[in-house]
Image 1 (tube, one colour):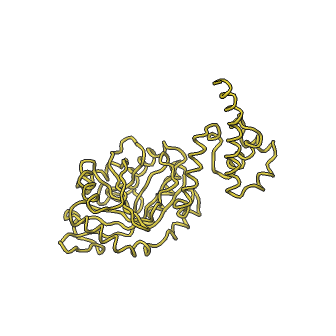
Image 2 (tube, rainbow, N blue to C red):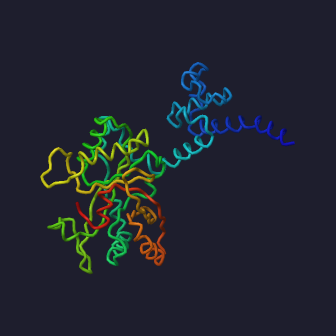
Image 3 (tube, rainbow, N blue to C red):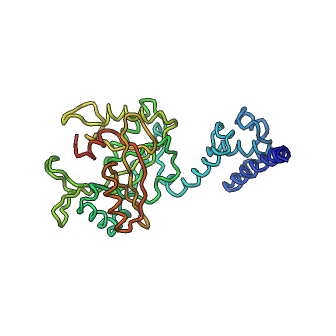
Length: 333
């Protein structure tokens, strides 16, 4: 009996796969395109990839590869194709609305001039007030407010999340990555930052407000940026480039791109060598979400405070660059 079941499974499996690929082609309205794919075109597109698939399966797979849904390397793994397609579906909710373009494309430079406005986020005043109460209580030292589910659809292995307040900096950094042989796609959207101003920073800027308890808070209009690389190894290359050309170490330092920060802020959802692990707390409202970067030793305090107020939140482990890790510890250089 086990042998019979095994044979039946072998017979049924290709049908399941074909239905899966066919459903994807149908869902994406690519049916007519599929009819134009000859056997020769399918062979040229796929080579030996997906060789175990039936002809109808290979034709549907070739269409999906041409549309950029899969790479040929994905076709021999059912788990990988399912995962990739789920990522594509999730991307429709957040990722795709904020695509600027490839690092080396002129269209990316142009789109960064029209990156978006902060008006919608600033309307979330009730949520912002609640977050500032957490600042006043000393539960947190800062937060970022951004569109809800904006990170949906990104491959965590290949993506770094960056923050900055200067579009000029982002334009220069994107072109810098291209000049250093790093390829990928850039996504960007508005975010609102709020963090405690520290006395050692000197004269407070115009965007510092005084809370009722006397605490000074920097209210910043910034950008959340997703660098999606072709390969996960590019994260380490990105880190080296930023450290050399986009991180300030001296007041009058030259040889840096515009608006370099003492402590650039970028993190990865997967481990990166030379990065430090911290916790990212995600608090959700109806339309937006706030991210809190929290040192592991302070997580219990933050979690207890949020749990006591019935906040809708989740906690992830992320890896952040060392300069920003020092910022979380109280340093400013």
